[in-house]
Amino acid sequence: MNSSKVLGFACLTAVIGWSGFSIADKVYTKLPVGSRALQQAALTVASVTKAKAGPIPMRSSVPELIVPDPGLADTGMLADPTPVTPAAGPAPIAPAAAAVAAAEPASPKKKGEVEFEETDLLAAVQQGIIQATLRGNGRDRMTAQLRNNSPTPLRISVTLGQLLEGGRNRVVVTRSATAELLPARTVELKLVTAALHSANMVGDAPYKLSYHNAERVDGFLKWASEHGGLSAPAMQVVVLALTENLPLQALAKFSASKPGEHNTDAFRAETADLLAALTALRDCGAKMDTFTVANDPQLRIESMIEPLSREAAKRYYGITEGNEWDFWKHELLEGSPSTRHYALYGIARFYPDVALEMLPKWARETGTHPVYRLAAVQALGDTQRPEALPILRTLAGELGATTELGKAATQSATYLDKRLTELGTRPQVIAFRDKSRVTGL
Image 1 (cartoon, rainbow, N blue to C red):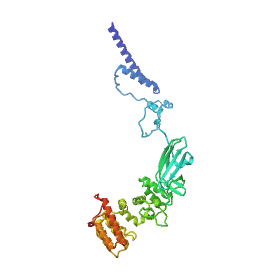
Image 2 (cartoon, helix red, strand yellow):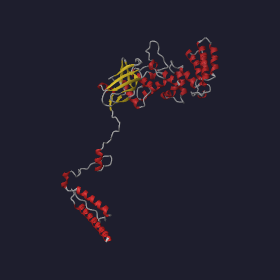
Image 3 (cartoon, rainbow, N blue to C red):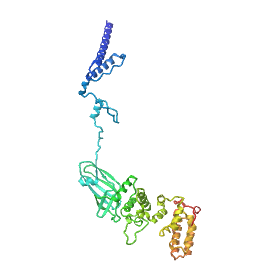
Image 4 (spheres, rainbow, N blue to C red):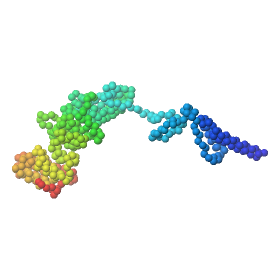
């Protein structure tokens, strides 16, 4: 009895399963096209039935495609027949996923993240939303105390070329800067500046924003910002060269102001910074023959003598290892009369073997101008060779201990003796040449 009940129940289940599949099949093939909801329902029933009934036999042929009913065009269910070129972008999102994506924000803000509104300092101060207190030294430094008086978080930018005025002083911002301020907060912003005039009084003083432009330097400032910038001293040289075309004597530290001249000591630069400034001006396309500092022959020979600027000078003036001796020879014999004697110092430093043989002859030659004789005596001390000590002491006796040349020889010997003691056994920093590589003097 129990066996028959079990068998009957199994048969009834099989009949119901096959009936369900048959109904779903007929619904799927005979429902009108517009009844999409019913089609979806039929597919759902079929899938559930298939899971219960097991594998379905494959049809012998693919069903013929159903032509859309023109009457359904007004329902908005048909796509626009006009071809549309697909735009590059992410893959299409399924309708259900699209609904979820629409419900969620595209880029949710992180907790505590602040959105800053960007504005320029000059405009912000003009509108009264930023209170700025500016103090600078009239040359290369400026401090800006900024307070946000608005209810909006602000990102303040100080643009390249912004002018600031303090009495008769005028400076220009040489590097752009930004600061972020929350409402009712104050920040301190450091600015890098350059004096527009060598008459600026250097010292701490208040400044204010200016609405004027520094037309003569704006183009270079933009170029420099795109090419790595310059050191503050080199930038100052460029700005004064563009605005006042100052001579070398007003810009170089190896020069000194003469009585009665305008004192520019606060704006003097090292020789390496002078060369960096001229190199930048040349690289940006400036006409170098219009700059007084670039045409001064003293800069060329001074920069070649100075070890810290020597390599930069060789690059700027196109001097190589192969033609350097020709440079010194030309400067000594055919250079500017005001700088020819400087070549003796260069020869002493970089060709000491030649100098030990050559300079005593120049010092002893009575027919030579006293400037060259004095330079030859002093240059012997720059050889940094022990062999120069007895030569200098001999010259001091020959030239007379009370004469200017004799005193110079004694002083050079004292300097060299002290220098050799300091150097001790340390290797020489300067690369010297021997006399076998040079001829002509």
